[in-house]
Amino acid sequence: MSEFASLTLTPLWPTNSTPGNVVSYGVTLERLGSGMLSVDFSSSGLPEGTTVSFTQDPARYTGNNPRFMYFVMTVTATKPTPTDSFTFVVTGTSRRESISVTNTIQNLFKGNSTAPVLLSLDLRPSGDVELRGLGTTGESYQIEATNDLNNPTWTSVGLSTAEGNGRFTFIHAAAQSPGIPMRFYRAVKPGPSNP
Image (cartoon, helix red, strand yellow):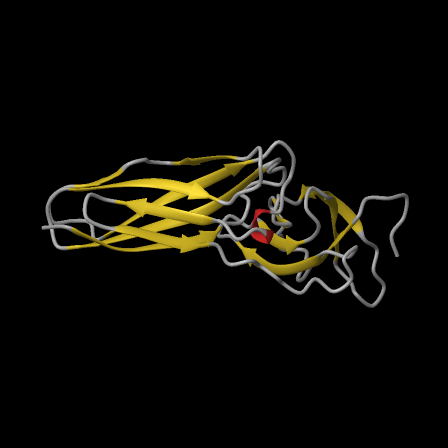
């Protein structure tokens, strides 16, 4: 007999530099035992005008495997909306069990609210650099790079827009090259000149 054991919710980073009005969350289900199990999803407490969809609803288990299933919950708003500032609830319901999880409000330190913070930089095997940052909901940021911090000449390498929760992702394609031993990045609001 299958038993619905747990439900978790994790905010996901945008997958491109122009996410628009969409915020995504990873949803992980765990079941114990084996056999048939169907779990329906629902949500409550999100801002008015938002729509929610799941990559699979209901989730259906059959047989002995898998123990865990992973889905994406997509929240779409009429305008960029900081859904992490709302305490909303996602519920999974099977015939015998119902489990609810409450979204944790994100209070990440951003320092000066006008200045974005780059949180991570990952080098992909392809030579691309992926930058992740935290800024202001719906704000666009110019991503700049320099090879020398002693005498920096900042060059724009592209733009990225923060999604509802202020997260932004930028992929600098083919950023790694043999002639450039190191590169530094920053994110700034677009304007005529930046210091």
